[in-house]
Length: 81
Figure 1 (cartoon, rainbow, N blue to C red):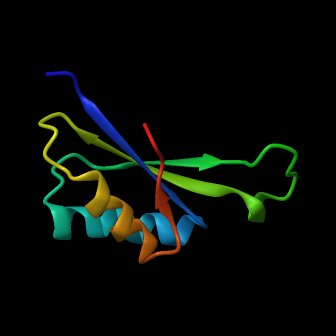
Figure 2 (figure 1 turned 180 degrees about the vertical axis):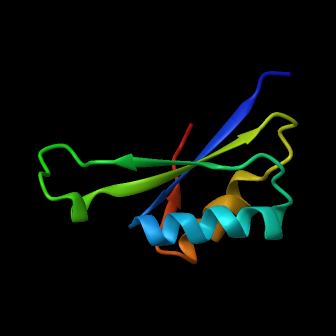
């Protein structure tokens, strides 16, 4: 089975860090999620950058709809694969 990677898009770094910590508690994610700054095209102001939380899901056990709803609680969303 190929590795599955989920990408949650969040409004700022603090929120992304909170979500990354919550993933282990709520979903039992064993591997530390990766935080990635995603500067919007044409935006010079770092405050306008979104943050991505990349979750490796090698077993393919995380449900996309559930992750999307979880991200929505933090004003974010699940990026479509």
